[in-house]
Length: 477
Image (cartoon, rainbow, N blue to C red; front, side):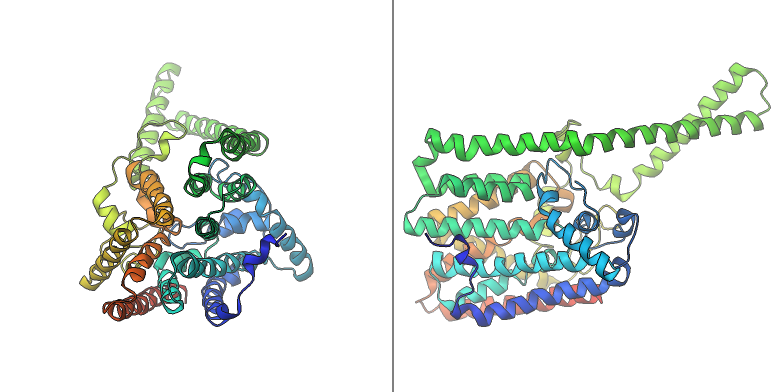
């Protein structure tokens, strides 16, 4: 039986570009480590307070916290197994702390990100060559175009889960594509394994593993054994595990936070009452109580008005309802502007204004480019994407990739999940754009348009590497 890890072997013909990609990924991770290293190498008894100083575009430094001091610090329902995936890195960090007297969480996370980004690049270029059937030059060119996108560069160097998710989604597509080419089924055990890892990192992405099973297996997807063992059972298991995880780890913390909040509020009210009673000229106890209630009411209203003006409040879209999952939706953030600036804009080309700012701190929800060339580049990429969709419209594999993209557009653009900062989620779908473009390249590879198209892709890559690289590097340095 063939070793299942054989796909991680770098082939002889891949080594030159693979080495360049590895150095490219390492560069961005080293810059982030240098930017924060002096502060984040310190040992602390409150790593949450320390790592909240991390400020790159609203990405969360939770992985730094969990690696430094293990806890289920992630949102359990959105990342049910991610904390457990970080347990071994945490143990490695504990050993390094004992040996060096410094916290190496930034370095350990950089190693994880480097692995995921490097193999994302490798598997993506294999998709172009082995699944779509491109020549080597065009395959590598589209790979570098993908890794010149702004939020691919950023995601592969920040301590959030998006690079890990990108790696698993590209790997899923690569395996599914190979199976489609060979007319082999997506087996139950493969579906379960991919689902556990992918959904464990980010629950909603687990749906995409089921889509891979559906597109590869066709009618076999609906067989009772496949539905039960590959879809229903793992879904119930991971959801049940998430509920147990919340009950065991998060619920006690939640109750403790609520009690601490109630105690703090009680002390504040007692101090406020004592201060009012000692300074008021009122003598009647009922009048004193009434005056105190008016002071409390004015204070609460003033705080509400102050908080309402804060970016973390104003930039939150209006949800459908206030239920547990309804509060994650958004029906007020403008869709067209988000599509132009935050779905096909910021993820591909960083905005110069409010560069890598956090929408919950200081960045407006919608930021526009001040150069026409940025919109020209965005328009070209969208046209190449749409042209690829048309050229590959008969490809089952492309429709699988587009189902990944469509799923993200439904939850973000239609339901509004995370729409106010949707560019952060873009590593979940950015690689779909060049996969579609690959079909346009394939269609034109023997025509007179092949060379101009290659030149255009090279020009776009050089522009994006220069634009995004300069903005990100100067931000870090």
